[in-house]
Length: 237
Length: 237
Image (cartoon, rainbow over all chains, first blue to last red; front, side, top):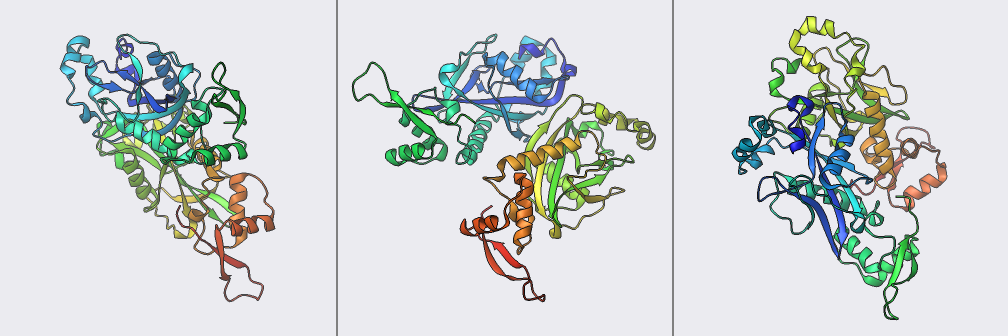
């Protein structure tokens, strides 16, 4: 948050913030990128404010880069969160301690904010997270979220719901998997997104006959029955 | 706009507005609902502001009802418009005249606003438009827009682009057509959304074999070769 304090509220578009839901896949689980919040005991989505001379998308990319080191990923607006009680959800937090540290100008962040939710899907191995001040970005299982700031758990759920609604028609496995992957990793992702168990053989056959993936070999340096590796055929998404 | 002036800017969430793109189909064309703007010579989307104790969706429904009389329709967020130059686009407007009418408090609307775009598809015949103060809502062909306020032409284009991207997978013809319709009206809508000419016979055959529509009779009281009427089979959307 510190980067906003040399500025006063005049430099920031009022009552408006941005939060990014960055999802990834690792070892059979879907993860979300969170920052340990600057107030002890809470985790928050990478988020921040929009400067007076910025548009929302530019602000989202700047914020994500600053808080996590991430760049070159495609962020997509998915929902504006505007419950008037969003700010009240933080009344359990110790803002007086923050005020003592930062001065009373900090109190403008207690006003009501609407927040624009952005999401992105990223490859776990492509990402090198960078700490920012005393914030520590890290990956957390979406099914086992820690104590979340404000309505951020709901923002994550809504991002996942949005992806799920579109997945049958706009599957984005390519964004989550490395160049070469095993069929079970792809199936895990589909099972999470479609919220059902998928038959191993039927899933493999359908992905191959639909021309989604192709065989590219086997894992190297392992036993003769090493898992088959696949890659995506059509990289249009 | 008058409804906001008994309140001052404190009652309104700052720097945030809502604009609704209401689309309909009539006589082979796609129409959008516009208000003749209170400053002469410009047309605007039905839009307004969010009160301090309101969420954005509630504000969108309130605004649409107030400006056009419309209710019971499903509004969907589709994009936040946040170009910092949005307000400057209105510098050609005669705000001094407005200030003379309304007093200097009106000038808060000259500040920068981000606007949340909502869209809806409605049946032309279901809609009875209601005038509000000196505003006159009316239908305008999307391909022949009049002089639009601010970036509203871009908001309309973006709504249509969003619908087009989804149309192949989420077609919404049911929302635009009456209970019974001719195949040519359905085809006109698909042609607009898919941006290509569709073969008459192939389109009809595909809609029938895919189980999208069914024959329900012929137009009554007309000659023996009156057009066949269809209805949608699955009303899940």
